[in-house]
Amino acid sequence: MQGKEMICIVCPLGCRMKVSKNEGGYDIAGNKCLRGEDYGIKELTNPTRILTTTVKIKNGLLSRIPVKTKEPIPKSKIFQCMKVINSVEVEAPISVGDVVIKDICGTGIDIVVSRSMEESIN
Ligand code: SF4
Image 1 (cartoon, rainbow, N blue to C red):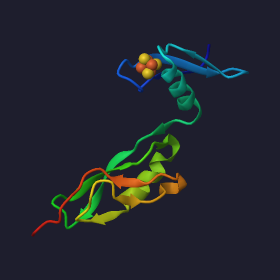
Image 2 (image 1 turned 60 degrees about the vertical axis):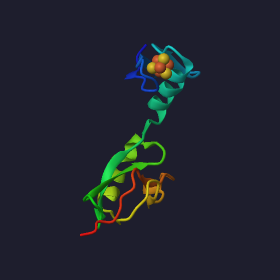
Image 3 (image 1 turned 180 degrees about the vertical axis):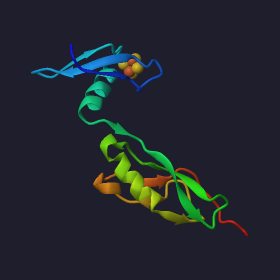
Image 4 (image 1 turned 90 degrees about the vertical axis):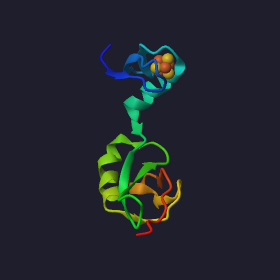
């Protein structure tokens, strides 16, 4: 079977899988459970990831604050999303879950703050 080799990241077992498309659906080998099957098909057809990074923050206790996508986004859009995220600056105080960018790059997914940060007194 020719196909894409991958490691399932759904649970810590990390099964090594091989996934390929056939006429009626998919051939999947190496998974120990059905969750791996779902992961393998998604990874072959539309791989997605949660994107975690940081953005600049004004008047905060630190100069950057961690942010992430609220849901996984297509892997193919990560580079484009990073360009947008790198152009943004937020202002303290800010709370965990606050939306930094709405519907980033038309994915329908928001970028949210992963931790709260108080305003710096200085
Ligand atoms: S296939 Fe199932 S058992 Fe294997 S890593 Fe994925 S979720 Fe875990």
